[in-house]
Amino acid sequence: MTQWPVTGEQLASVEPTSADGRLVTEAEYWQDWYNTGDLSYEWNNGRLEEKPVSDFETFQVYLWFLELLRHYLRLAAHWQAGGAGDGLPAVAQLGHGDP
Image 1 (cartoon, one colour):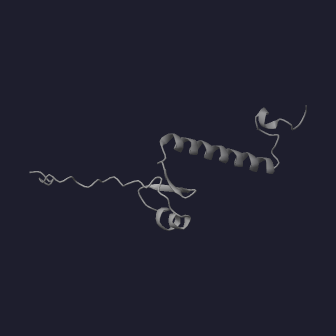
Image 2 (tube, rainbow, N blue to C red):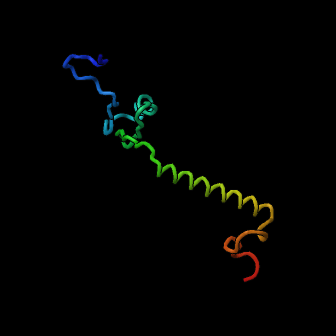
Image 3 (tube, rainbow, N blue to C red):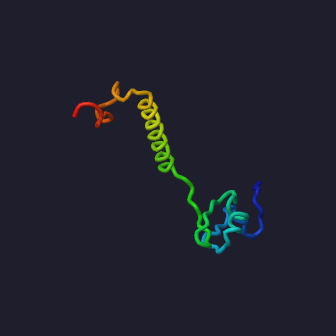
């Protein structure tokens, strides 16, 4: 036995309808469109622009940038502690010590 209606009516779409390109005021954007749920929008000069969902490559770039920032903070803490000459690679020591 089937669970679907046997009528010839077309079922409503499950996909949300995009409002990309719709003209709205900035106040309307913040009130009605900023936290819409399924679709994300940006307000650009009076028009809504649909923001794409993040993909795996974007996530990988985020992780790379986060690790770069952590590495910088570790080195900055090391330099502030006065360890600019012990244990760092020669590239990091350029400008410090003998010419």
